[in-house]
Image (cartoon, rainbow, N blue to C red; front, side, top):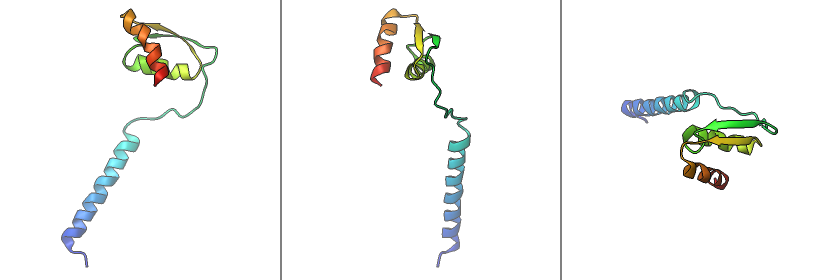
Length: 87
């Protein structure tokens, strides 16, 4: 038979697991799930070789948009499209 200490431990583990699931599911925000296309759209993205601009450029390229990249460093800007296509 399970002792009281083991029951409390199991209850805490289940509570912690439920809390982690809640945080993971609801606290990270909504997710865009539609499969829309950007064919025929022209997009100008600033800082397209780093951070969120890079991810935005990658996603819009996958959806078919024509992308113009505005970057500070031309060397890094020229490398960004090859990095985006390899990932």
